[in-house]
Image 1: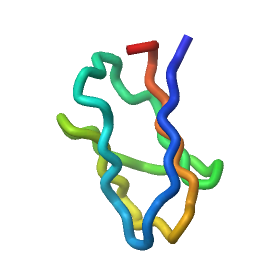
Image 2: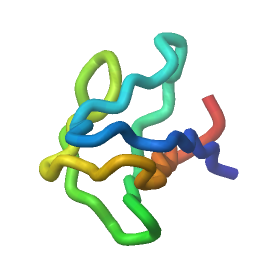
Image 3: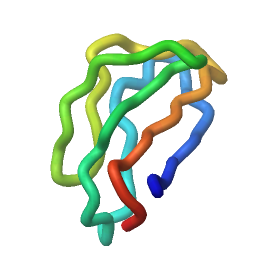
Length: 65
C-alpha cells in the first residue's frame, strides 16, 4: 500500500517539502493528473517545471512511511 501527499501549488513553485520522518522513497509525482519529472532531495522533491497557481501536486510514495 502506498501513501500520497497532496497540495495546491503556488505560482512558480518548483519545490515540494515533505515530512522529515518519511522513510519511503518517492515513486511518482503528478501535476494536475499528468506525470511530472522530479529530483528527490533530503527535504522533499524538486520539480523540473514550475507550476501555476492552484495546480494540484500529488506525490506518491512506494510504501506507507
